[in-house]
Length: 149
Image (cartoon, rainbow, N blue to C red; front, side):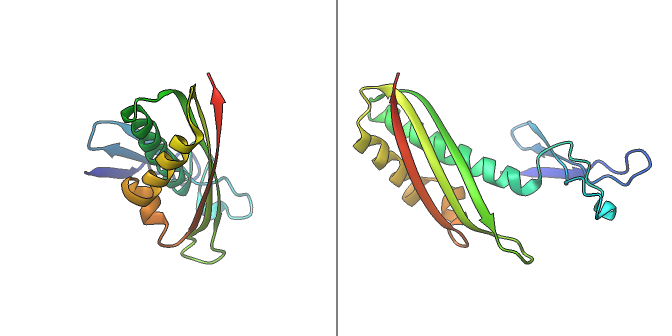
């Protein structure tokens, strides 16, 4: 796996803090810093997600992918899956994630709660590289609800 991240450089009168990531699979992701009037030297313009937001989003995508795949392999009629992530970070640098909560909403026909619970556990214990990696610094908790399609 590879990725090239490039600074977009100065934009206008300000020195910007935008970055473009080009992934090995040929996709592009834009990132930027926060626009902070108290710290204009930081240069963010709030034009795209923060880098750490993309880490959190990637983690949600990784675990949701696993949950859907595990349920499909179990021949369950899964129709939808979303996960809302909330997090806390350390107050001082490096501001690693210290707490992450993931709430899954899984939609399907006749989906047993036990199957959903098992899929989430399997993702977090065995398959989701991002969750397992972030679990080295963060307390990761989960909850879920099953909705009929």
